[in-house]
Every structure is written in structure tokens, then in C-alpha cells.
Image 1: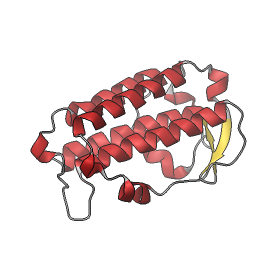
Image 2: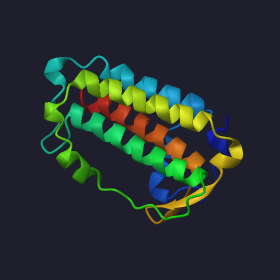
Image 3: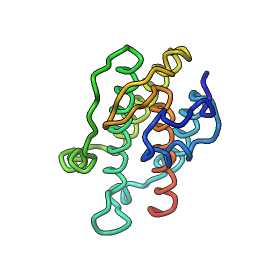
Length: 172
């Protein structure tokens, strides 16, 4: 399976560089597994009294952040699917704060949300591992910038690592 080191300038927009840089030079399959494990290492140990904890006023709670991670993965995976299937329609960005404002996580079970993330990640992994290298190197346009399907996969991993780090550093 494709490794992060095959990505080159122009495979993704500069504003995603932090996410891509957060991923070690692994295969995409390994990066999907390891980033999931890094996130779940924290999230599976959250106690019921901490699910609605935010580390500062105006910041997302643990549940809101988990929903954001799951929503973002769905969107980024859909982008990759559209790219590999030859859809050349430019894909818009999305407003993460608008999504969070209507997600209504207060009425959701945290344990069900964890299971949802696991299932979404499993579907993401199945999609990416079913693709050939030439599929992954196809490019499309998202948020006004060129992006390859492979880059989209590594961005998913980097986004997950990013939030795993924030949880460990700020939500303890």
C-alpha cells in the first residue's frame, strides 16, 4: 500500500500540511490503524463525568470533538471516493463550527459515538485498502485546491493524530 513519502508538493493545499506532517512515513493502512489507536487510547478511558468537559470556555467538549472527528472523516472519505471514481466536480469546503452547532451531542450516548467512530474508521480503511496506487494518485478539487485521494487519506490520519494530541495535552 502507498506510503506517505509518495506525496509531493501540489498533492494537497498548504493548509493541510500540519496534518500530513503529523503522520509518520507509514503505509496508508498502517497510518489509519495507528492514528485510530492513538485516538482511542485516550477516548476509551474517558469517564462518564468527563464526556462533557471542555478545557476552556468556548472550546468543544470531548463529545463535540469526537463528533467533529467522525463528521470530518466522513466528508474527507467521500472526497477521496469521488476523486477515485473520476468525479471532476469541485467539492466545497465545510464549516466545522456550523456542523458542531447542530450536532446536538448532549442527547447522544458517548459509548455509541465511540462505536460510530470505530465503524466509520473501519469503512474508511476498507475503502482505502481496496484502491490501487493509480487510484490513490488521482486528483480532484476540494475547498478550491487540488488534492489527491492519497493525500486525502493521510489528511484523515493527521487530523486524527492532531485531535489525539489535543486530548492528551489539554483535556487531562
